[in-house]
Image 1: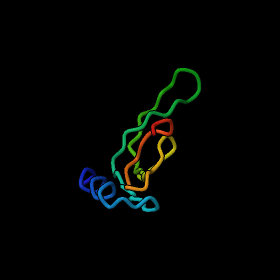
Image 2: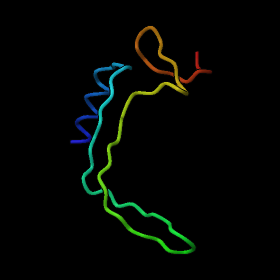
Image 3: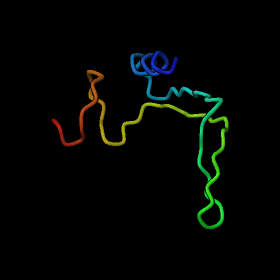
Length: 69
């Protein structure tokens, strides 16, 4: 499901769209006082979106690095 969702997001080419994926059994480590570590299983929501922080989009809808002509 995740691969198909991300593939659809990339192929659509919409920069303002986001996809939220819910994981029911995410394993997390929590540190307590001293060297005590607890292992927990929690639900987690992860948001995927297209980001152009290190890239720019050209007129032909291709993304290239900022320094690339």
